[in-house]
Image 1: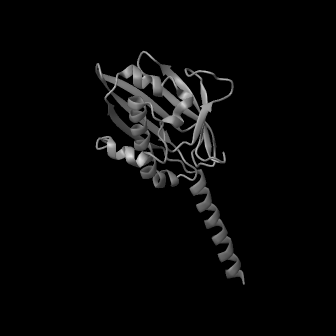
Image 2: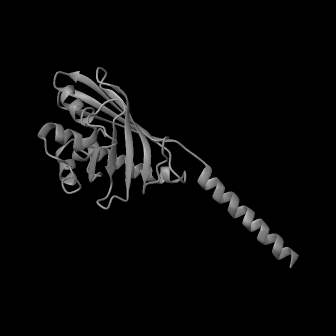
Image 3: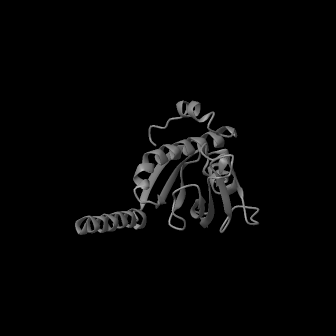
Length: 198
């Protein structure tokens, strides 16, 4: 009887330790993708930098988006909500920081999540546009994130990379045509645009 009791205690300690390890350990993941866009840098900046609340027009994985908390325009400190489903049960709130229109760059800090495993305050994106000539620019997009539990970051990485590729295709298509991108037209658009560099 004593052996069974001791074995039970060891089992409980092992499960507690494993659970603690899984849910308290952190690992930062980072994805960086680049895309050349055959458009003037100011046209691309107008979409990614100056229409912060309108990301749903270019990202097929976001069903709706808008500025929130009283913000009416993009810029330093502007906040938005990105909804991943129509029910409003999966979303993130983000803030635009380090906004630098002269350098065509800014960061996006995740400050509230619901229905996703992203860790608040430790996940952020960086946008940078580099003019290549009068009618071409390069968009560099990086996303650094932490998940709970930590191993989901590795599981999510290939799916997130594909989602971000779709987003960059969406940006290019919207800049060139003005047509919104969504889950219905993204597969067709990926065949239309060169995604080999992504």
